[in-house]
Length: 537
Image 1 (spheres, helix red, strand yellow):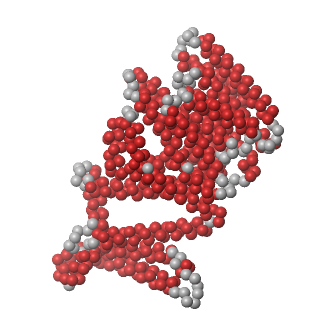
Image 2 (cartoon, helix red, strand yellow):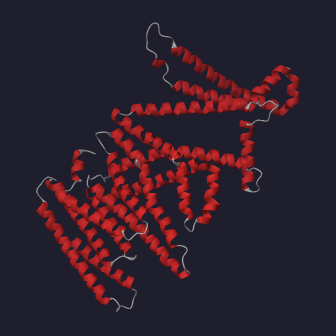
Image 3 (cartoon, one colour):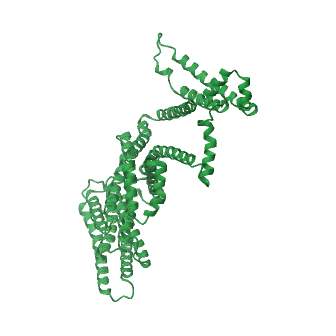
């Protein structure tokens, strides 16, 4: 982001104060209609943190620091979005359900969904107003932040996948005797993994051992070849010949792998064709016992497996570092920072896994889904453990953040949102949506109308302020012009709201439709008037 781009998305202080002040007052009033107080407050704070993360991801002066902070803050944003939606559902579900009768189910569902959308609308409004203060919602910055969140998610996703795979394999192997799919899968895994890691004692296993040895030797040779060991020793006359030693080790490992790979099929033919009795008769007793002890040792096979994994990990790490170094110096920190943040998130999630899972289980037990907790959640927790479950939930929440940021980027890239007015547009849209859904709750009609008018005021004042800031600069004396312009919008909206309130009070009790339908119709009328006025201006 250059200075010109940042300046073109700023607005004068008066317009900014109007946008932020009106948004804050309306959000405070609308959140009062929501029963889930904690979830609503968390959702509001999430809007601020999301805007801060966007700004940090494009912090030109300290790119590496900003990227690390934006990466670490991805988890609070993900948790906040989950609490704003799932937390509201859980809290209201415990309050509204079970319903007293069949007829009360539909109103309860409408109430629950309306309060969820009110919270999400307030979250969007707070995010938009906060982002408008620095003009941080643009295509480039949103794309950068999306890339940061994606790379951040890679680390916890990889760790969760490894833990999930290990737990699934252990569970299926331990339930090989259970009839059904578990038995078939468990038996298949036992047949595949047993000969590799837990061979039958008292006989030779030269073929499989040779394959493991070939894999370990090839991976170690590749890892040694990728390490810059010779470059670490200074080039002096008395310096040891590290390069020759490294080359010798690498050649030894490669030849060991090749020989082991050649031995594997031959040994397999002998073991399958001759049998153990014939091989014991052909080989000297001492040699046969030595081969049995070496090839059937589970510990040695485990060592070869970990050597294979270590060699592959070193090769991948060196490849990644080389690609990083090939980048420009100012991009090295930016490239590495999301993975550092992902590592911090992974360690943090694992550290609080126990209390987090207990809190989630306790919250779910207060809802109508308590039976599902016993049938699904508790068995999954017993099989995979709290660390795997918590990491999986964190990864899912991060995927939701990726999806939300992706939708915002698409809206900007397709010019559905204009970069210059994206922040105030989001703030106005959030207030408008929250007010509309609040109309279906026990919300006073005046608050709904004030919210709708306030949404138009926020959009109009913010757009006008952005135009002034772009044309004459943010330091010009434009306060009078801004106040007059906003005052006209407030006057038109106030007249429409007052007329709607008057019609509502006069028509109450004399309309042959439900009161909520009448209020909704009047709300649509005032929205149409405001939209017409905005289009004319």
